[in-house]
Amino acid sequence: MSATLTLTPLTVADRCDRCGAGARVRAVLPGGGELLFCQHHANEHLDRLREIDATIDTDSAPAL
Image (cartoon, rainbow, N blue to C red; front, side):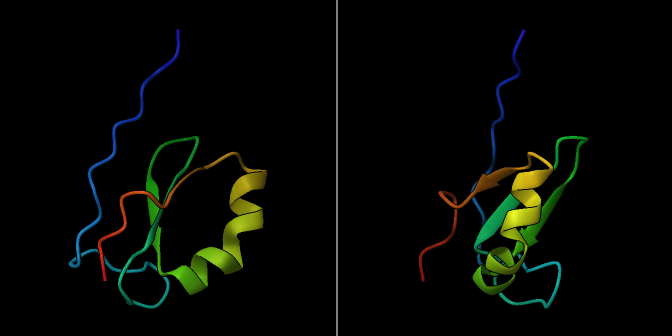
Protein backbone atom coordinates (compact mmCIF):
# COMPACT_ATOMS: atom_id res chain seq x y z
CA MET A 1 0.00 0.00 0.00
CA SER A 2 1.45 3.37 -1.00
CA ALA A 3 0.60 6.66 0.66
CA THR A 4 -0.30 9.72 -1.37
CA LEU A 5 1.51 12.88 -0.35
CA THR A 6 -0.63 16.01 -0.59
CA LEU A 7 1.22 19.26 -0.02
CA THR A 8 -0.26 22.68 0.50
CA PRO A 9 1.31 25.36 -1.68
CA LEU A 10 4.02 27.50 -0.11
CA THR A 11 3.03 31.10 0.55
CA VAL A 12 5.03 34.29 0.87
CA ALA A 13 4.70 33.83 4.64
CA ASP A 14 6.70 30.54 4.54
CA ARG A 15 10.34 31.13 5.49
CA CYS A 16 13.61 29.22 5.05
CA ASP A 17 14.47 27.19 8.15
CA ARG A 18 18.14 28.15 7.77
CA CYS A 19 18.11 31.91 7.13
CA GLY A 20 14.54 33.22 7.20
CA ALA A 21 14.39 34.18 3.50
CA GLY A 22 11.29 33.31 1.49
CA ALA A 23 10.87 29.55 1.16
CA ARG A 24 11.07 28.19 -2.40
CA VAL A 25 11.57 24.46 -1.68
CA ARG A 26 9.92 22.02 0.71
CA ALA A 27 11.73 18.82 1.71
CA VAL A 28 9.50 16.18 3.27
CA LEU A 29 11.62 13.81 5.35
CA PRO A 30 11.04 10.05 5.14
CA GLY A 31 10.54 9.76 8.91
CA GLY A 32 8.01 12.59 8.98
CA GLY A 33 8.36 16.32 9.21
CA GLU A 34 9.42 18.85 6.65
CA LEU A 35 12.05 21.47 6.07
CA LEU A 36 11.60 24.69 4.13
CA PHE A 37 14.50 26.24 2.25
CA CYS A 38 15.25 29.29 0.15
CA GLN A 39 16.73 28.32 -3.22
CA HIS A 40 20.30 28.95 -1.98
CA HIS A 41 20.01 26.58 0.97
CA ALA A 42 18.04 24.01 -1.04
CA ASN A 43 20.92 23.90 -3.53
CA GLU A 44 23.41 23.59 -0.67
CA HIS A 45 21.60 20.63 0.95
CA LEU A 46 20.06 18.93 -2.10
CA ASP A 47 22.58 16.07 -2.35
CA ARG A 48 22.13 15.08 1.31
CA LEU A 49 18.33 15.34 1.07
CA ARG A 50 18.41 12.97 -1.89
CA GLU A 51 20.69 10.57 0.03
CA ILE A 52 18.10 10.25 2.79
CA ASP A 53 15.31 9.89 0.19
CA ALA A 54 13.48 13.09 1.11
CA THR A 55 10.66 14.21 -1.18
CA ILE A 56 11.71 17.52 -2.75
CA ASP A 57 8.87 19.85 -3.76
CA THR A 58 9.61 22.91 -5.85
CA ASP A 59 6.26 22.99 -7.67
CA SER A 60 4.39 24.77 -4.88
CA ALA A 61 6.74 27.77 -4.62
CA PRO A 62 4.95 31.14 -4.61
CA ALA A 63 5.37 33.37 -7.65
CA LEU A 64 7.87 36.17 -7.23
